[in-house]
Amino acid sequence: MGPRQDVFDTLKLVPPLAGLSPDWMERLVAAARLLRIRAGELVVEHGGAHPGMVILHEGELELSITGHTGRRHVLARISRGQTFGIVAALDTQPALYTSRACEASTVLIIPRETLLEAVRANGDFALDLLLDLAGRTRLLYRFVGAQATLPPLGRVANVLLTVMALRGPLADEDGVVDLRFSQTDIADMLGITRQSLGTQLKALQATGAISLQYRGIRVLDVPALMALVAR
Image (cartoon, rainbow, N blue to C red; front, top):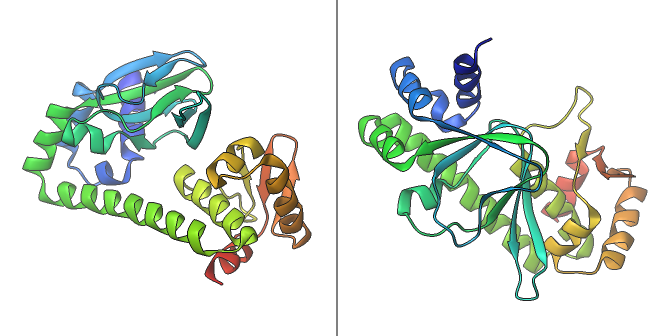
């Protein structure tokens, strides 16, 4: 498989792009800029100018913001075929968060001009892009609402479900999901101490919904987590 076909295959993983015609996909492949980054290196810094629609081609990226104390708060980790920066690419406002490589990675950058040309020329693509943004907005509202109204165990379940939604399909054939997300990062998302989170995770583990691993959390029963959030 050649590099051009490899880029084409990655673009096809992005839901809003998947419905574009072969001609337009070729135009995106031709316009895409390939950026290789080392582990720990930044793609875009919070508040900086955004280069366009960014799609992860290889590796893993971390999206984060830094608080007034200088502490970094992880918002999400993304894998191949996932994208970010659509809002900043469209409205030309500063980047909403910092994107950093968790490991040696490669990203594809679709320039804003090319993205806007595709939007103007393809009504179905414009609609798909709007639906994608609507889905992200709904996920954000659901997260905020749940954090304000749910009891502690439900809030933890909600964070785990949100992390899974942001990462895309992760389950194996048995429905098990391994989340490479540290307890410190999850505690930051909840605004609680790591010790308080540990208490809730042990209670959640006792229900059989999750299993605590050395470097993450294994979700064993997604419906059980959803039931906790629905209460």
